[in-house]
Image (cartoon, rainbow, N blue to C red; front, top):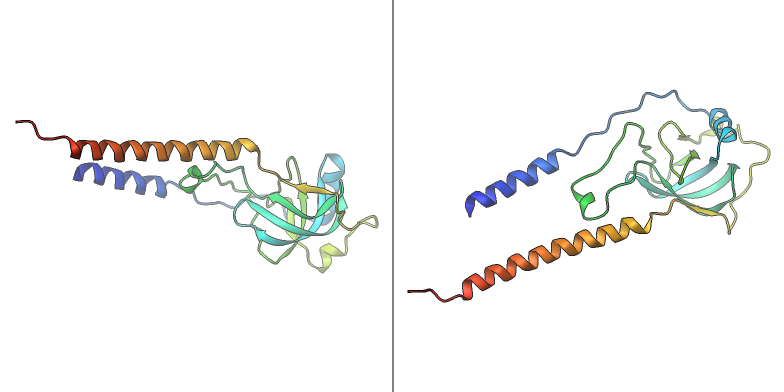
Length: 189
C-alpha cells in the first residue's frame, strides 16, 4: 500500500512538473497601421478595449472603447488570448501554451486585432498609448448594443468536462465501495 501511495505521489509530481513554460514569440512589433492593413485583407476585427477580466488565463474580457475595423462589437467582448484549453478538470494538470500567447494586463487599454473565433496573440495586440490612438481611422465608431459578443466556448468543452468529472467521481465511488465491502466481509476460518 505504501508503494502504491509513493507511485501515485511521483506520478502527480511528474504531471505537474511537465507543464511547459512560455517562450516569447519572435514577431515584429505590431503597429496600428499594420493591424489595420492585415484586417483589410481578411475577416478581422480591430478595436480599442480595456481589459476588465482575465488576460492571463487564455481568455480576456475587454470593454470596447472604439471599433476601428470589422463588424460591430458589443460593449464588452471576450477574446481568446491563447490556444483552446482542455476542459476542466483536465485543465488543472494540462495546459497548452504557445510562444505567441497574448498577456493582456487587467485595467490596461489595448489595440487588438482578432482573427477566427475572436482570437488574438502577441503579434496582433499592442498597448494603446497616445501614438497608437492617434492612428485611429476617421470611421472609428462606438460599440453597438447588438454587436458581436466575441469568443464563445463550444458546448463540447463543457460537456467533455462534465463527462470527465462524472467518470472521476464514479471511479472514486467504486474504490470507496470496494474498500468498504472488503472490510465488511467476515474472516474465513
